[in-house]
Image 1 (tube, rainbow, N blue to C red):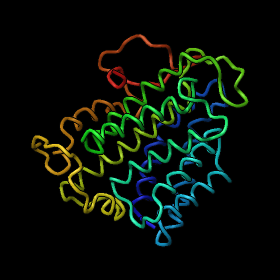
Image 2: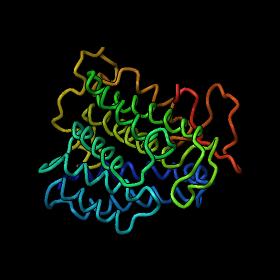
Image 3: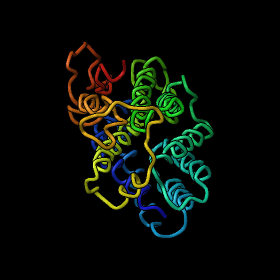
Amino acid sequence: MSKALTDLFAEMTRNLADERDSLNALDGVGDGDAGDNMLSNFETITNTLRQNEGQGSVDQALRAASKALRTSGKGPTAPMYANGLEQAAKDLEGKTSFGVNDIVKLLGGLLGGVQNTPGVKQQGEGGILDGLVPGVTTFMQARNNGKSTLEALMDGYKASQRGAYGTTQQGSGFGQFGNNDTSGKVDPGAAGASSLFGSLLQTLLSNGLSAGRGEPTKTSGFEELFGGQPQQSQQPQQQQPQGGYGDALGGLGDLFGQLFGGGGLFGGQPQQPQQRPSSRGDDPQPRLRDQEVI
C-alpha cells in the first residue's frame, strides 16, 4: 500500500492536534471531548494505514482503517468517518499508489459515506455536513474550473468555515444531546470538518512547496505524493519568484500565512477584530479569523 497516503494522514493528524482544545471548547453542550475524539480517531486511521504499508492496495488499507474506526472509534462522528473511508475505498479501487490528484476521490468518498450514514443530520440542520458539504463541493467545483489542488482546497476550507458558522442558527444537539438547545453555538462536528480541510491544506502547502522546489521532503511518502504529478493548474499561471508549486499557488502563500499566523487553524487574533461571542463559558465559539469567512 502507498506510503504517501499514510504520511498524508500522519501529518494531518499532527496538525489536528493543534485544534483539539478549540474543538473541545465548542463541545460545551456535549461531553467537552470533541477535539479529543477527533484526534484519537485520526490516530487510529493513521496507525491502521501504517500497519498496511507495503501490502495490498490503497482501497484495502482504507477499508482496514474504516473497520478499525468502527471498532475503536470515539464519539458520534466516528461511524460517519468510517463510512466515508469505506466509500473512498470504493472510489479508489485497485490503486497501489496515491498522488495529489487522488485527493478528489478521497474527499468525494468521505462526503458520500458521511451523507449515507443513518441518522446523520442533513446540511442545514446543524451537524457535520454543514461543514463537509460546502467544503467538498466547493473544492470539486474549483478543480473542475481549472484551479490547482491547493487553490481549490483554500476555497473549500473557507466554504467549510462559513458552513460551520451557519450552525449557530440551529437549535438542537446530536445523539444523546439532541434535546439540548444549541442556539448561537457552532456545532463541533461541523467545526471538525472545517479543521479537517485546514489540516489537509496546511499539510499539502508546507510539503508541496518543498517538493516543487526540488528540496528534500519530510518523508519518502511525500516524495511519492508529489512525484511525477502533472502541473496542478489547468490554466496558465503568472510566474512566481518562489518557483515550483508557487506557480500554481498565486497569492496563496501570503494568504495562508495570514490565516494560520496566530497558531492553529482556529487560533490567533484577527488583524481587525470585531466583537464576537466569547469562546469561554457557556457560549463557546471557534476562534476563526474574520477574513477566513468572507
